Amino acid sequence: MPNFAIEVRDLTKRYGSTVAVDRLSFTVQPGTVTGFVGPNGAGKSTTMRVMLALDTPDGGEALIGDRRYRTFREPARTVGALLDAEAVHPGRRAADHLLWMARYNGIPRSRVGAVLEQVGLSSVARKRVGGFSLGMRQRLGIAGALLGDPPVLILDEPVNGLDPEGIAWIRGLLRSLAGEGRTVLMSSHLMGELQDTADHVVVIGRGRLLADTSVRELLDKVSNGRVEVRTKDRTRAIDVLSNAGATVAVIGTDTVTVTGMAAERVVAALTAGGVPFSGVGEHRASLEDVYMEMTREHTTFAAPADEPGAWA
Image 1 (cartoon, rainbow, N blue to C red):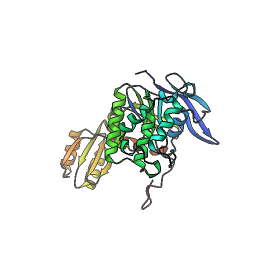
Image 2: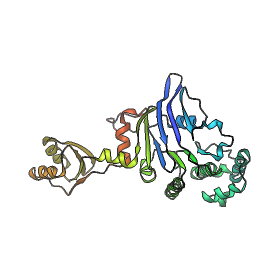
Image 3: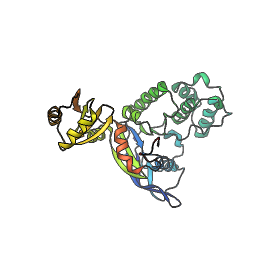
Image 4: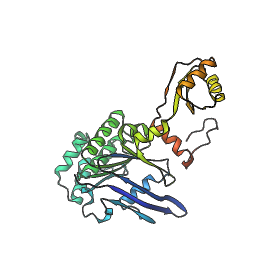
């Protein structure tokens, strides 16, 4: 498998007075699944569009294997992309859609049947796409991305619309493709899926880089030094631990996290204060926790948290 990294170098993209991507730099390595995450409006889709020469940057560049996308004579053989699963004519049959793609990109028609089978759509190959569910359209879009057997995959929200079985399937597919040495970049808002799928994560907010690290390192960094306490008297636990000098955060109806105090001291303080507790141990943050903490100040669209019934 050819070694094609994706390199984003000091990338900037503006739409009028709005800066969608602001001097962004990161690298996606072969042999890994890299999660590309950030709030709505963070610049993820814009960055992917620049990678695929669908938008022209105002500064910097995006390279695939040290080349710009537009320089590839048969790009589908190098880069497989899924940006919009709805971008298929509803009157076209699934197999015909892929056959058209194959002819346009100089790909053998035998690949059509192979990728339809790979994504589980062989039985509906002659069905018109207009009758497909969103999950089926996502599978068809992934089939199109795989058509040229490319070493690089760029997928925007590939699990959107998939049922639990479909999500488990694509998780296994992406890890298998990375295991073959391919470069896999996927954006997602389902942070739990990235935790189970991605090796590396790139987090952006308002077009700027917030993190570029392995999933394990990111979780370890956020989890480090936090103690999790389970108690039925959360209010008293917060008072006792706060008075002892710790920083306490609520994460559940009967669970708090404690920062700035070792587990042994937490146990001693709770015992001395007469606070009942059922468990004290190391807190392991989820990727969702990390994401919310990192992007809280970089969210473009959010309702005030203190309004009754507010949602974002």
